[in-house]
Length: 206
Image 1: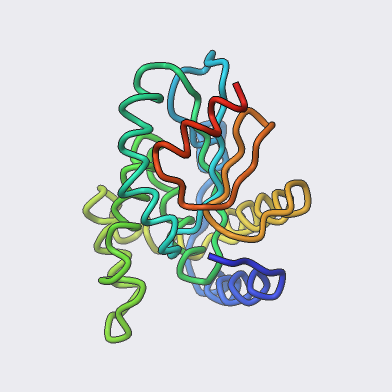
Image 2 (image 1 turned 90 degrees about the horizontal axis):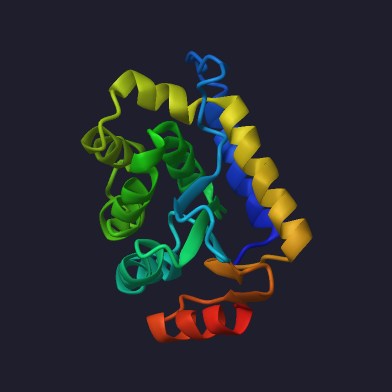
Protein backbone atom coordinates (compact mmCIF):
# COMPACT_ATOMS: atom_id res chain seq x y z
CA UNK A 1 0.00 0.00 0.00
CA UNK A 2 1.44 3.37 -1.03
CA UNK A 3 2.36 5.94 1.58
CA UNK A 4 2.87 9.68 1.34
CA UNK A 5 3.46 12.49 3.82
CA UNK A 6 -0.06 13.71 3.05
CA UNK A 7 -1.69 10.36 3.82
CA UNK A 8 0.40 10.15 6.99
CA UNK A 9 -0.86 13.54 8.19
CA UNK A 10 -4.45 12.74 7.30
CA UNK A 11 -4.33 9.40 9.10
CA UNK A 12 -2.61 10.58 12.23
CA UNK A 13 -4.55 13.82 12.34
CA UNK A 14 -7.78 11.87 12.46
CA UNK A 15 -6.37 9.63 15.13
CA UNK A 16 -5.24 12.63 17.15
CA UNK A 17 -8.83 13.85 17.08
CA UNK A 18 -9.88 10.50 18.50
CA UNK A 19 -7.18 10.71 21.15
CA UNK A 20 -8.70 13.91 22.49
CA UNK A 21 -11.81 12.06 23.57
CA UNK A 22 -12.33 11.50 27.30
CA UNK A 23 -10.39 8.54 28.56
CA UNK A 24 -7.68 7.59 30.99
CA UNK A 25 -4.14 7.20 29.72
CA UNK A 26 -2.00 4.23 30.62
CA UNK A 27 0.23 4.78 33.60
CA UNK A 28 3.87 5.16 32.61
CA UNK A 29 6.03 2.80 34.58
CA UNK A 30 8.97 0.45 34.23
CA UNK A 31 6.69 -2.43 33.24
CA UNK A 32 5.20 -0.54 30.27
CA UNK A 33 6.02 -2.63 27.22
CA UNK A 34 3.97 -0.73 24.66
CA UNK A 35 7.11 0.99 23.40
CA UNK A 36 9.44 -2.00 23.29
CA UNK A 37 10.39 -3.70 20.00
CA UNK A 38 8.10 -6.45 18.75
CA UNK A 39 10.46 -9.28 17.88
CA UNK A 40 10.34 -13.01 17.19
CA UNK A 41 13.18 -15.51 16.96
CA UNK A 42 16.68 -16.03 18.18
CA UNK A 43 18.12 -12.81 19.67
CA UNK A 44 21.58 -14.01 18.65
CA UNK A 45 20.69 -14.88 15.07
CA UNK A 46 23.19 -13.68 12.49
CA UNK A 47 20.43 -12.42 10.20
CA UNK A 48 17.85 -9.81 11.19
CA UNK A 49 14.79 -9.21 9.03
CA UNK A 50 12.65 -6.13 9.59
CA UNK A 51 9.14 -5.59 8.25
CA UNK A 52 7.23 -2.31 8.08
CA UNK A 53 3.53 -2.98 7.62
CA UNK A 54 0.09 -1.43 7.86
CA UNK A 55 -2.86 -3.25 9.41
CA UNK A 56 -5.24 -2.24 6.61
CA UNK A 57 -2.86 -3.07 3.75
CA UNK A 58 -4.08 -5.84 1.44
CA UNK A 59 -0.52 -6.57 0.33
CA UNK A 60 0.56 -6.95 3.95
CA UNK A 61 -2.40 -9.26 4.45
CA UNK A 62 -1.31 -11.38 1.49
CA UNK A 63 2.21 -11.72 2.89
CA UNK A 64 0.88 -12.50 6.38
CA UNK A 65 -1.40 -15.23 5.09
CA UNK A 66 0.66 -16.76 2.31
CA UNK A 67 4.33 -16.28 3.20
CA UNK A 68 4.80 -15.47 6.87
CA UNK A 69 3.66 -18.89 8.18
CA UNK A 70 6.48 -20.51 6.19
CA UNK A 71 8.95 -17.86 7.35
CA UNK A 72 7.99 -18.48 10.94
CA UNK A 73 8.12 -22.26 10.69
CA UNK A 74 11.32 -22.58 8.66
CA UNK A 75 13.37 -19.55 9.67
CA UNK A 76 12.12 -17.96 12.89
CA UNK A 77 11.21 -21.01 14.96
CA UNK A 78 14.42 -22.75 13.92
CA UNK A 79 16.55 -19.85 15.20
CA UNK A 80 17.93 -18.89 11.79
CA UNK A 81 16.63 -15.32 11.81
CA UNK A 82 15.49 -12.61 14.19
CA UNK A 83 12.30 -10.97 12.91
CA UNK A 84 11.40 -7.40 13.88
CA UNK A 85 7.94 -5.90 13.31
CA UNK A 86 7.51 -2.16 12.70
CA UNK A 87 4.12 -0.45 12.73
CA UNK A 88 3.70 1.73 9.66
CA UNK A 89 -0.02 2.63 9.51
CA UNK A 90 -1.18 4.25 6.28
CA UNK A 91 -4.62 5.39 7.40
CA UNK A 92 -6.67 6.12 10.50
CA UNK A 93 -8.01 2.59 10.97
CA UNK A 94 -4.55 1.09 10.69
CA UNK A 95 -3.31 3.58 13.27
CA UNK A 96 -6.02 2.59 15.74
CA UNK A 97 -5.35 -1.11 15.12
CA UNK A 98 -1.63 -0.60 15.74
CA UNK A 99 -2.39 1.18 19.02
CA UNK A 100 -4.54 -1.75 20.11
CA UNK A 101 -1.95 -4.31 19.04
CA UNK A 102 0.78 -2.59 21.06
CA UNK A 103 -1.48 -2.45 24.11
CA UNK A 104 -1.80 -6.22 24.22
CA UNK A 105 0.79 -8.41 25.98
CA UNK A 106 3.85 -8.75 23.75
CA UNK A 107 3.21 -12.42 22.99
CA UNK A 108 -0.23 -11.56 21.60
CA UNK A 109 1.01 -8.84 19.24
CA UNK A 110 1.81 -11.01 16.22
CA UNK A 111 -1.26 -13.30 16.53
CA UNK A 112 -3.52 -10.25 16.86
CA UNK A 113 -1.95 -8.54 13.84
CA UNK A 114 -2.41 -11.74 11.84
CA UNK A 115 -6.06 -11.93 12.86
CA UNK A 116 -6.64 -8.29 11.92
CA UNK A 117 -4.98 -8.71 8.50
CA UNK A 118 -6.92 -11.88 7.75
CA UNK A 119 -10.22 -10.09 8.49
CA UNK A 120 -9.89 -6.93 6.40
CA UNK A 121 -13.03 -7.61 4.39
CA UNK A 122 -15.06 -7.87 7.58
CA UNK A 123 -13.79 -4.94 9.63
CA UNK A 124 -11.81 -2.50 7.47
CA UNK A 125 -13.33 -2.65 3.98
CA UNK A 126 -16.95 -3.35 4.89
CA UNK A 127 -18.68 0.01 4.41
CA UNK A 128 -21.65 -1.16 6.44
CA UNK A 129 -19.55 -2.17 9.44
CA UNK A 130 -18.81 -0.15 12.54
CA UNK A 131 -15.04 -0.31 12.09
CA UNK A 132 -14.15 0.53 15.66
CA UNK A 133 -16.70 -1.93 17.05
CA UNK A 134 -15.38 -4.71 14.84
CA UNK A 135 -11.81 -3.93 15.93
CA UNK A 136 -12.93 -4.04 19.55
CA UNK A 137 -14.47 -7.49 19.02
CA UNK A 138 -11.14 -8.80 17.78
CA UNK A 139 -9.36 -7.16 20.70
CA UNK A 140 -11.81 -8.79 23.11
CA UNK A 141 -11.13 -12.17 21.51
CA UNK A 142 -7.42 -11.51 22.20
CA UNK A 143 -8.24 -10.91 25.86
CA UNK A 144 -8.53 -7.11 25.99
CA UNK A 145 -11.30 -5.74 28.26
CA UNK A 146 -13.49 -2.91 26.86
CA UNK A 147 -12.02 -0.31 29.22
CA UNK A 148 -8.49 -1.21 28.14
CA UNK A 149 -9.52 -0.93 24.50
CA UNK A 150 -10.85 2.59 25.06
CA UNK A 151 -7.64 3.60 26.82
CA UNK A 152 -5.59 2.15 23.96
CA UNK A 153 -7.37 4.01 21.15
CA UNK A 154 -7.38 7.34 23.00
CA UNK A 155 -3.81 7.27 24.28
CA UNK A 156 -1.95 10.28 22.92
CA UNK A 157 1.45 9.13 24.14
CA UNK A 158 1.15 5.82 22.30
CA UNK A 159 -0.11 7.55 19.18
CA UNK A 160 2.83 9.94 19.21
CA UNK A 161 5.26 7.04 19.61
CA UNK A 162 3.85 5.29 16.54
CA UNK A 163 3.84 8.52 14.52
CA UNK A 164 7.44 9.29 15.45
CA UNK A 165 8.68 5.77 14.68
CA UNK A 166 6.93 5.90 11.32
CA UNK A 167 8.27 9.31 10.37
CA UNK A 168 11.82 8.38 11.38
CA UNK A 169 11.64 5.17 9.34
CA UNK A 170 10.53 7.04 6.25
CA UNK A 171 13.25 9.64 6.64
CA UNK A 172 15.96 7.03 7.25
CA UNK A 173 14.93 4.35 4.73
CA UNK A 174 12.69 6.24 2.29
CA UNK A 175 9.80 3.86 2.83
CA UNK A 176 6.92 4.67 0.49
CA UNK A 177 4.77 1.55 0.57
CA UNK A 178 3.89 -1.47 2.67
CA UNK A 179 5.05 -4.06 3.25
CA UNK A 180 8.72 -3.07 3.16
CA UNK A 181 11.47 -5.44 4.29
CA UNK A 182 15.11 -4.93 5.21
CA UNK A 183 17.41 -7.94 5.34
CA UNK A 184 20.40 -7.58 7.66
CA UNK A 185 20.34 -3.85 6.98
CA UNK A 186 21.70 -4.60 3.49
CA UNK A 187 18.83 -5.43 1.18
CA UNK A 188 15.53 -3.49 1.07
CA UNK A 189 12.44 -4.39 -0.92
CA UNK A 190 8.84 -3.21 -0.93
CA UNK A 191 6.66 -6.12 -2.01
CA UNK A 192 4.46 -8.88 -0.65
CA UNK A 193 7.23 -11.41 -1.19
CA UNK A 194 6.66 -15.04 -1.91
CA UNK A 195 8.56 -17.44 0.33
CA UNK A 196 11.06 -18.25 -2.43
CA UNK A 197 11.78 -14.55 -3.04
CA UNK A 198 12.05 -13.96 0.70
CA UNK A 199 14.72 -16.64 0.92
CA UNK A 200 16.56 -15.17 -2.09
CA UNK A 201 16.85 -11.77 -0.40
CA UNK A 202 17.82 -13.48 2.82
CA UNK A 203 20.62 -15.33 1.07
CA UNK A 204 21.89 -12.15 -0.61
CA UNK A 205 22.03 -10.35 2.73
CA UNK A 206 23.63 -13.19 4.70
